[in-house]
Amino acid sequence: MPTPSPEIIHLLSVFAIAFTVPTFKNMMVLTYGAILSPGRRTVAAALRVLGLEDRPDFGKYHRVLNRARWKPLLLSRLLLGLIIGLCLPDGAPLTLVVDETLERRWGRKIKYKGLFRDPIRSTKKKVVHSPGLRWLCLSSLVTVPWSRRPWALPFLTVLLLSPQTSAKLGQRHRTSVDRAGQLFSLVRRWHPDREIIIAADGGFAAVPLVQHCQRKHIKVRLVSRLRLDARLFDAPEPQPKGKRGPKPKKGPRQPSLQQRLQDPNTIWTRLKVTWYGGEKKEIEYCSGTSLWHRVGLAPVPIRWVIVRYQEKNQTKHAAFFSSSQTVSAQQIIECFVQRWNIEVTFEEVRAHLGFETQRQWSDKAIQRSTPALFGLFSLVVLMALRLHPQKLPYQSARWYDKQEATFGDALAAVRNHLWQLDNYSISPDAADAVLIPAHLFRALRHLALQPL
Image 1 (cartoon, rainbow, N blue to C red):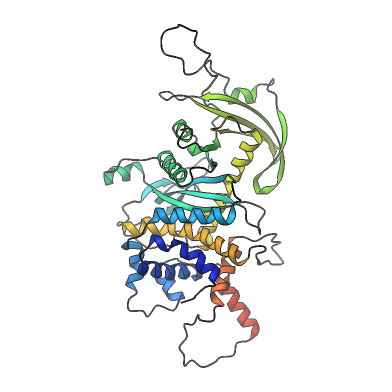
Image 2 (cartoon, helix red, strand yellow):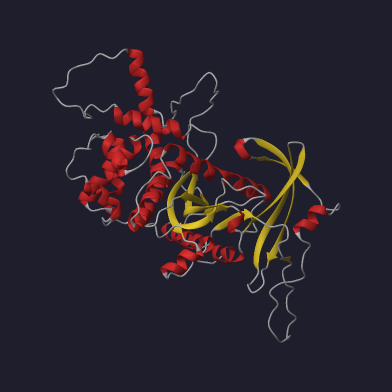
């Protein structure tokens, strides 16, 4: 078993209060094994890479996920606290990104699985559905010293059920919007005094979620896409004194965003903003405030922005909104653009941490293993930040002009730290010494450190 440096031990010891003492020791074994394992992230693979495949008590490591008692929500709170403490300046706003991702799984014993739209395999003309588990992931956007773009570090991941699965299990169905509101309330309870900004894609652009974000005890700023045909209204005029009857909730209807986009009299303002990939891009925008209304619900005040820009010799457009009317158009645009970093995180977790290779089928293990993998992504980044606070070494090649470190390099740095420990040994004491050529040793070391 490796024993990391005091910096890493101190980082991991924060999570001890969420476990019993024996379970925490077993969880640390699985954590080191998951970091060092190439390929699949199973309990067996974690034990094998640590040289524990001959342990007669191997079952206790499986029980960490499928039976042991520990507190996942407390772990999420502790992880967010570490992210804030290590990556955010004092008093800085907490910028979060919320999004869904699909874990493709099948099997008769997985009772939480459903049939969901597969965003990777679907196209504009054809929708492909895949069996699996759908997860809602809440991540914190932070800056790291060895990258120009913000990184989305997951800290809270929950399962989303399909309507059919909810009915089959006899549970009340909760949509992704419902679950997102619950997560926002949870983070606000954890950090009641910090400014919270949340970027989400168009699937979370819903009047009920905006209402939830604008509640006095929640008070978070939501930034998302807005449909061009959204029903927008002026604020109601003050009711004349002495007039009886209910007060109007909205005024006259405004032109739709589609009409404003097509209107030649619309005044456009040029602006240079930080765009996808961190580049500066010149765009044109128009902005305003409205009451967004949906039939059967009270209208909500928002600030909307229509953006017009050139891409591949074509004029494209998009519309965004903020649940706060006091922010500028540039803040809304740049906040939403940062949302794409969570897509990078999803890809890195799949490529380097074995997402979708888990083989657990018990209910509790399924609910725990995937959130643990997403949390491991953030934990690896925090470990790399402790080991390399200024500059992270990264691999490059003649055919790949790599400009900055990626998560694969952060994982390699943490692996290098664990493999170099003097007390790490899985070979028998009486083994014969074998001389290895230097070039072969370097090749083996590269294979051990670099993610597959």
